[in-house]
Amino acid sequence: MADMARTDEAISRIRELIVTGELHPGARLPPEKQLCAMLGMSRGSVREAVKALEVARVLDVRRGDGTYVTSLEPALLLEGIGFAVHLIQDRDLADVMHVRRILEAEATALAARHADGDLLADLRTLLDQMRAASDTEELVSYDTAFHDRVIAACGNPTLASLLSALSSRTLRARIWRGLREEGAASLTIAQHEGIYAALADRDPEAARAASVVHVATSERWLRGVLDLPGSIPEPA
Image 1 (cartoon, rainbow, N blue to C red):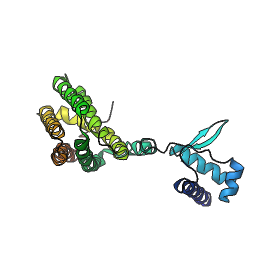
Image 2: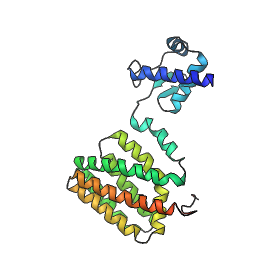
Image 3: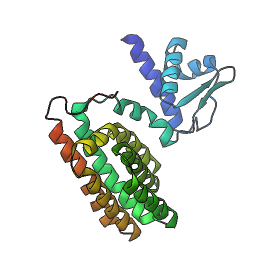
Image 4: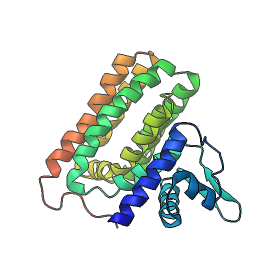
């Protein structure tokens, strides 16, 4: 426990150097001996801290070259959240969908403010592909691409990265809903049409409402089936 506490302290010290700007994105860390002296900590603690920060994508250890601060871009730093979300158990998926509903509503409203011809053309193509889909998995793949395109247009990379992690965890449940619930495909397409219409009107509040209704539909279904044993099958 003492070793872990010292490692945590070393992590905090290095993080502080980054937060204060002493180490900026892309900066090379001092050699290990110098870094240990700067932090006033042992070589073992500093090495473990560097390893942990490398896993967290804060540091980039280049063998034979040195250790550098990464770009610190949200998509890079939030990769770990995507990994953690995939460990969430099926019984908690409805809560993941709840969080997705809250965040995606805001992202969709923001996208309405930034909507341009390219975004609308891409979404119209995806809607056409959803209608022409030959099976549920194909439909959900275009459904996912539709949401990804909207989220990418929100203008907030941190929000987009968080939603990407949450959305990927609920993918299997969305496919299962399409297979189990009668009329799910036509309802899904109709709700996407509603989102598209709000974006085309550049109406943030209508876009927010359409997004809430859409994700809430899946959330309600999911909360219902999770009360049934064995409702969502394990992946093949």
